[in-house]
Image (cartoon, rainbow, N blue to C red; front, side):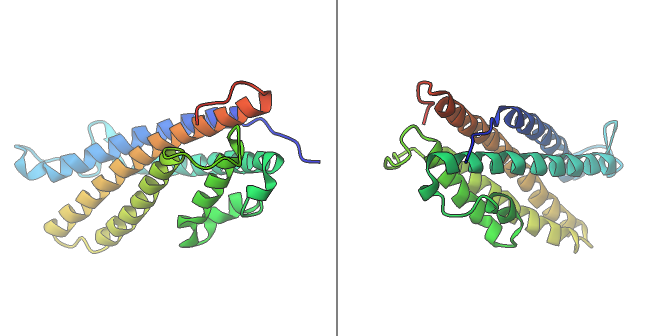
Length: 214
């Protein structure tokens, strides 16, 4: 027998971790701005230090936080997918295991999790089988578009950093890195909104309350 599982505590943890990722995106993005403006500044600076912050330490901390965020987010995502199975199993295009495994399939992870998220969203609505409204999936699609864009930009920036043997090449890589941090921060903000909205929808439906905002 399928049972509902409360995602509220996981959602709060995901939101807190995403907020931490946004702070690191801002910090590391400001470093890229400082580097790009260095030629116009009347001083030089150690490229490994930003103010009192060691950039190597900050980057390692950011990566650790990102990893923790990914783990908790996927656990939350899987829990919502299991709940969706209770309300509208016939609307779920993939088995619950794909809510975890879909994130780790190269290339296909650019669309599989989004499809699962859409299925969860529909099942979590007060009326799962109603047609999607004109704005029904705008938030989810905006989040996913930013996430995919940040993934693409990060890959380009990483490749450029591997060939930054001239100041011009490093500047180009820094510009791409800055774009990545901006997109990643935007994706994190939208992810927070998606997490809060989906969790609210499932909580309202499970409790038999007035439908949450769609």
